[in-house]
Length: 426
Image (spheres, rainbow, N blue to C red):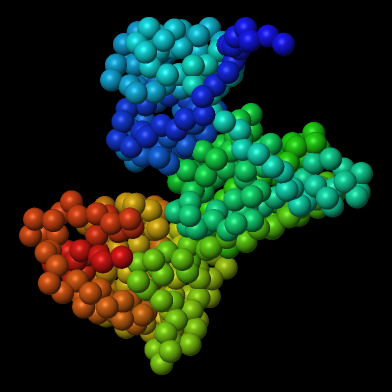
């Protein structure tokens, strides 16, 4: 027996957590690994600066929207000024070592994503594996599989339990820019993130390339999660990906998600149906305008409906769609609500009429992602918000910065060019 102290390993770590809300964190690198690390940091409220000459499409979209600040060049001395924590995620050992050395000299903890052993801060792995579709694959002599996961409309808390389980066990995650990006922060270390974003009029990965990627990674024995916003089978091309995997004899599991067509209006206080008011609702893709030769929508029938019309991907063509609905019988005064960034902290609702929809979208500078709803249910919701807001200070009376978990952008009633701001009580 000996009482001599045991030598401590240089890889021993103390499991602690970091409170980074509002604190500067520098991520060096702009590839998929940096994307994943940034997602986790934003999920805990960090003020993230990304240093890289180029970014993935999803990170680029975040930079454009102001979600992160982008220092568009290679790492140089001084980039860690004011940082509480740093992440070296370039994939270049020399550059990552340079970042870690400066962090050490400044007493800033740093994670090197390519080497946990050389990191002063180590992200702990998640435990346990419950990979359903692998059971099917094993029975058929296969080692990999694909899980199509609907991530919901934006709030990471709206993903299903099964979807969260699949993500936590993934070897590879193929993700869209509209998927809830904070979910990438819970991936186990070593998981590969592939950015398959399709940015409006911007960079995008072809669907055929995505299909091939899913098949190739699964054939390599990987547990592949395809993470999408909303539900994969509601304008999400989920069936195309399922068919591609089935043709390659790859086991596939489908995990439905909360579709933005219903979830976003609901969080904005708008029911798509209501007893005694509407008995039907229809969901339309507005990515093609009425009259386009590839459009499959029967706009004359939609215009004759009395119920609710929900339009996805319809910001650019809103004016044309509204005019067509009016031409086919919908009254010009029909209430319309446009909800942007639904279920996120920047959600805002703009209410107008079918006649003024085009000018409202222009004047309010509305950009995708947005869901707009046509029908009397919008007026019902407006009356409810007005009642619950009674007595509350108005945003244009000194509370323009009012914020809630959802609806930080507020609600707007637009009648022509007159704008009234109502503070949402969500």
